[in-house]
Length: 230
Image 1: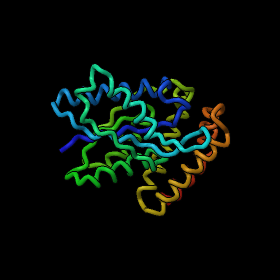
Image 2: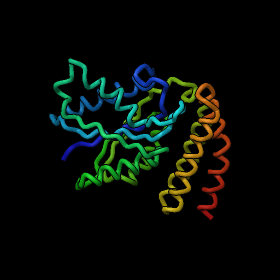
Image 3: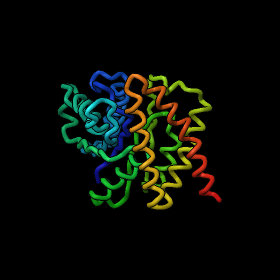
Image 4: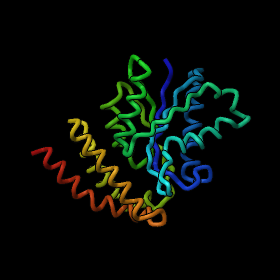
């Protein structure tokens, strides 16, 4: 049985090959996977890169998954590793707009390969670790989450209380979405709305727009989660 890895996407920079955050993130991911292959002497992993059309630059056609693979493929072609990683499979998942979608659509890919049990190792951003872990355990049979603290933008250095509150409310909303297909449909609609909002704000105001959107939507998420418990 092939080992599966899942790499969660976080936006699309203008040039991913030169982007500091993604270079830091994916180089660490590469080393983690390379170490796993060395330790287990198994060199044919399936690596799913997950992320949809979140492009902030016209014509808004790029996906996080394809952009990550573009950068990751350059890492696999380095002379020092090329021969050893030639059997690595890089698989794009291009439908997702949220962390929950990342996991659900990756699980679809996994099940389509007729694996006996859903065993996976997931890489994601540090501040989302608890939420990724909780959701992943509900979706996969066996899972390990490896947080990577790669983000050097202002989003990483927001007030810790705000980050904690945001993660708590989004986790409640994610769990609510898992309860019923109609809830999940509403969840996906909200996150598509998020990217429409961010595109309207434009790339130069992206960081401020992300915080503004969350501040607005957290009130709505709290309302939904309270309805869930009543």
